[in-house]
Length: 78
Image 1 (cartoon, rainbow, N blue to C red):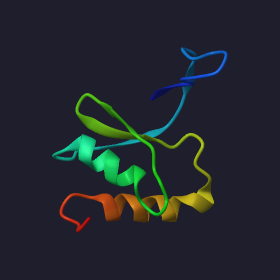
Image 2: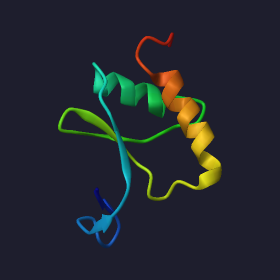
Image 3: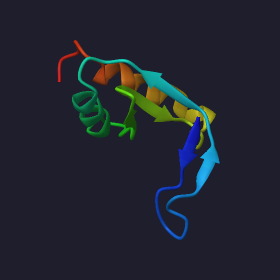
Image 4: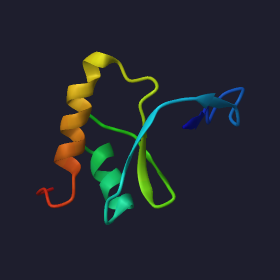
């Protein structure tokens, strides 16, 4: 995956990255739930899928991000 800086002095700069893509029925709603969780997770939509760029994610953060994704998953109570 190629990430994008998205701000500052180099808003269009691209960086090599790693990402996880998820296919969900309502990507916008899923992203809203991710952002509103106890541990906010920021993602984007590309080609109809939710993409979570994990380039800056520390190993220690994996479990809490995975829990946030599970909690925000469709079919879970809000």
